[in-house]
Image (cartoon, rainbow, N blue to C red):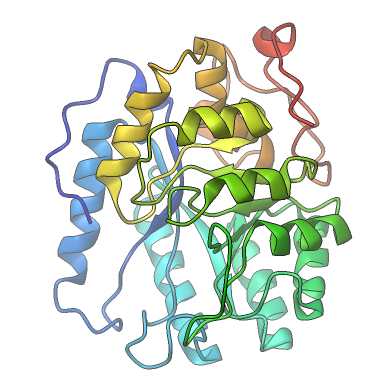
Length: 314
């Protein structure tokens, strides 16, 4: 995870940047330096101008059960750690509730438990293929509660890998098509693999949006994403490699993205797709997206200043 080596944030950025894909550690994850890692993320985030980290804890990160197949005990343990961090950092942290769909009843109960305490989204790992019917009850509940689902993804799954059931854009598109009222965030377009395959897979599925995180900083990736799905379906994020999140933030400023559309990617789209009131510190901003019904799809509204210039993003 990046330390505080990032350049200081530009004036105003600290109140206008949401990282929609973050992770934190806890004392039962097998690392003695867990608190230092969390502190490093906060320091780097402050210097980059991140106002809010929307984060999850992935069970015990493999310490007492597999990372992608966490036991119910580890799922709850990680979610408890995230709840405690949200309580300790109410301004800087929001929470995804992590669930394992192989344990359906437990997963649904965890969503209800953590949503009641302020979780604003659901995190799904590579525990089950995204188009598996086991995910349907979770997607139904997500739509009912207005909670976006951040789903781990490969960019073009060509085969299976050990210890995970990886999904790609086609898998997520099939889940989204079955649940048009749910918003699916396809994780880390820069996470490796054929991102052009992802663009083709999701272009015509408007309730799939993309986070820009991942260690990949391929030339042309952001331009191609912009052309394939439009800025209204792009969310800035870091995941673990915060330095590449910073690189993409700077790249977005030089690829010809108009300031109003850049604001959508940096924070406006997150304001729209997460539940109303998730980011109260952004209320009243000049380009604040119009309020929406939490059960509506992700393209229900755009900031008024962008409407006249909005591109057709299918």
